[in-house]
Image (cartoon, rainbow, N blue to C red; front, side, top):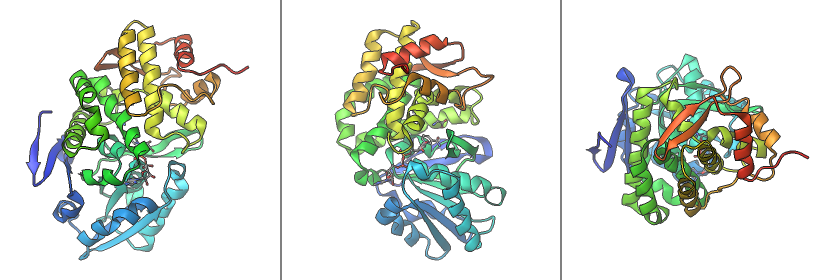
Length: 372
Ligand code: NAD
Ligand code: GLY
């Protein structure tokens, strides 16, 4: 953490990408701090994109902040299975029906699914309009809302149709986590643990020491944790906005995880659950290749287990299915699988030299079988 500042009740950090630098506000009660939202909507139009669940709980707080503007709302169905081009089109339909021009601001209000879809809509509508992220799940607050990756899924691969499009601001009201289902909260913790493993062993150790407070959603522990994750992500994105290098580390566990998620059918395992199991495969492989020790893998598993996250691959999938799904991963280059592994605890690295047999062995260690 190197850039802490305060803005009313909020902690503030910045994603430093030159003239497109933007703030991340983190704090309790920020949905009621109407000025935070309004300062990033200079013109007269805004379109809130949300889903049935989040809109029922909170959308009035946003619309009340914008009563003097043309503020329209599009409410999408809730779920990863709706993160596709058909649903995306509903956003464009509303923008056009309500005559939104290029000065409009799209407000992504929900979890990572809404953030990714609303952000992608913003990147395309009239060749690009600005947007604000107001994430309401832990996963979206610590990861998806920061960094400008936007996408929808294709039947043949997750997040395959998308764009880089940075938001104007990210507004994180930590109080929204109080209504989040425990399973969803825990799924977000997988991405939190990821930051420790790839970048910051002190943070991993802090998580081990504070996990009970975090699971109990103690306000100070949550704010500290979310701030720390956002700062790590902001630093990585500032160094490598379009993932030419270091940003790929953020995909620890994701190559395996995306295959688990897609192979089971979107909506069966949560994204964070799939990432948790994927990180265990990556840790086992890292141990097998001699980088980390068995006790390190045990630490990873223990922390994930304390968060009630899976530490084995889904047994319903075969190794062949997983390998096939991984071959369309976005990190595949020149037909070579690129994996994020652990050189040591707190230090991730990217490699495209791992032998397929070692990958298969790690998947077997984590519970997958070959087809008969
Ligand atoms: P999600 O958006 O599906 O939200 C999970 C559930 O929680 C949904 O049912 C949602 O309606 C509900 N919900 C949201 N906020 C709530 C609240 N405050 N109270 C009660 N319920 C609430 O899932 P997610 O885990 O937030 O995001 C997963 C998605 O994020 C995946 O599609 C993944 O690909 C994407 N993602 C993107 C990035 C990125 O960098 N763009 C990074 C990580 C993940
Ligand atoms: N969640 C991975 C990234 O933003 O790069």
